[in-house]
Image (cartoon, rainbow, N blue to C red):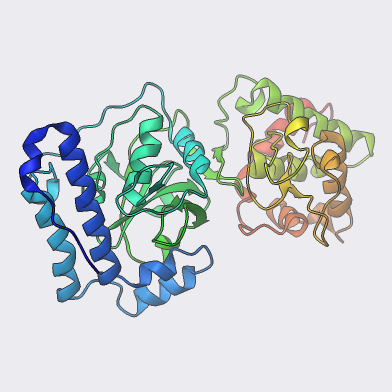
Length: 393
């Protein structure tokens, strides 16, 4: 590995020179990270959470030699007069954009999916490294973050555990040498390693090597997770609208469409509870389109409701890629009544579905990677059904 020297004398030339120098320090720190933590290359793959777990179990903490490599990068930062709190300086100040939320951060981050990793990169047209990516995403929302991970990990406020994390929170790993943005529901997005691109993946940090979680901006409402695409889903009872259970007009309209179809089919209200709890988890009662599904955008009333999970679209995030797991056509899945019918057809085919717990019935229909996620929506679903259905829940 060849690392060119940093011109320390350039620091006094002005802010642009400082930024360039700090970017170079980040390059060096990244290089040292990959020497000190070779497991990061494997763990950055969405399918390699087990590899990260194995690395942690085998001793993910740095040895004395790798720790010295990591600290070398910090020494360089100190030589450049970086305001790193790890060197005893004051915590970096943040300039926050008005009204920005963690949900907006999570959504903005996903527009960089596919941008290549570039050592020290801060320009998405060329490539981004992990901290450059994080800095750029927050900058898009008017929030100024420090350039390097060791300073970013001191910004904002601490979060106790991944169970308490919200979309937009920073996940710092490997002792402060890597950073990702949490999307919710066990998903994260980051610029992993050279040769890979920015990607949404399973948050392998939950298996080991998680150093810290930092919340930079609070959400306007509590957030409990995210749908399959990482799109933030409001916590039960906090959808942010003024209608039933905090639903806005659009959400309430979709809930009513589900209830109407259940009634038209002569099914008990339990079917509506199952369907609405599923839609709350999968899409927060939004009609999502997907750029990978041709024709879905034209059918979406709200162009901002976009997801990228597989070939899933609509209120129930139903797959429409035409294979054995397909639910139907694009127009079927993007139509409230037809998509509800597809859900109800599979629900009512389950023996004893009416006596099943909501989360069991929903999971049997959906086959989600998060089988316990539906349970938290039951109370809100029953409240919605009770308010919108003449017969109650």
